[in-house]
Image (cartoon, rainbow, N blue to C red; front, side):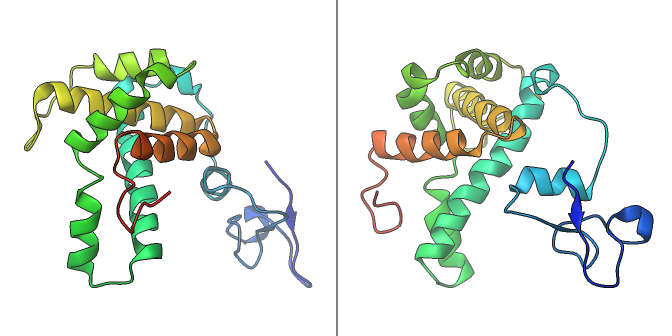
Length: 179
């Protein structure tokens, strides 16, 4: 873990009464640590090997990472009412869209290919509302890859895959995702 930078007249870290969180009065960190590093600093705990996580646990966090990326792009490019933002986001954040992206990226996955297959072959306890079971499982595989990469602290690869996948399936033809 990185050492905190003390503010004048304060001690750094949780032991001194601070939160240990980046940006807090007593827990400022040097540099621009990524979100995962900041979360781990703010909420320290046991470090687990990301390869030991179940594919559904990886898909769970990967779904949130993908959703955050898409929502961030939509909000940055379209300051609109929330219902319009949701309408724009749904086009990208759906099992059908994610399945298309997963299919397009399948041959481009390097070491992530095994994680994708584990996610795609998982046995989720839920059913897709608006997608076929095949699409749902392919989307789960993509989410597992994104979760694996996020928990491996490889956000550049996450962003590369999302951007490339959107371009490969032709979803970058509107004003929001023109790449």
